[in-house]
Amino acid sequence: MPVIVFSSPKGGAGKTTAAVILATELAGTGATVTVIDADPNKNVVDWSKLPDAPKNLSVIGEVSEDTIQDQIDEAARTSTFVVVDLEGTASLLVGYAIAAADLVVIPVQGSQLDAKQAARTIKLIKAQERGRAKIPFAILFTRTNPAIVPRTQRHIEERMIEMEVPAFSTRLADREAYRAIFSYGGTLQNLSDKGMSNLPTAITNARSFVAEALQLLKQGAEQQSASREVA
Image (cartoon, rainbow, N blue to C red):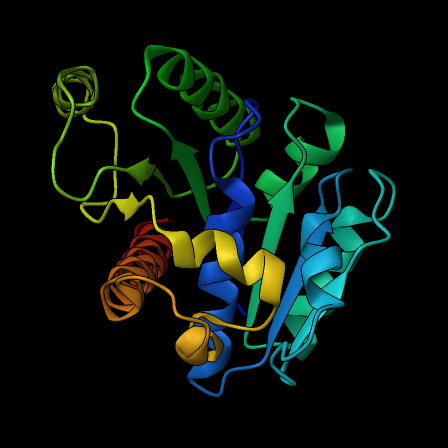
């Protein structure tokens, strides 16, 4: 089953938030989901201990570079989707997880510092591809202003287009609801009685991100199949 890895060597890029949003929205469709929390901060593990986590979503928190590949393989055999939230360093564990990925999501905020770290992640992905099939990846802009695209972010996006770097067309906006699930637990839908501002808009944004991730997975699978036929 598909393995979706969230990777960024820079802390605070929105990696864990995006991973939990993807996992919970997929679980909301009835799919079984395993999240592997390979970040030492264990924020996904902490979220899973709060009320209302989906019953069909499980979280694995005990991970090491010696076990990560076996844990991904086992989770892929038993779950419809596997989501991996990686630590914010370029380690062997990160490399092993990326090597097992069907899609790597690289969260980036609209700053040059984040863009530089995204380039490091892409270089790591390319290193894992040596002598094997390509690993699909895409940049995801996170914590964006839903009303205004700042000049710096626009410049970064234009540069990525010029360099043909794959990127989500959906930007994951800076929403109170995305932070709230780590306080209240559960999913975005569980926040309906918590007085969250613009909750329907946050849910629509999240679902657009998930739909695009599924489309990228489909495209990656088709490319892999075409490569095998040519070989």
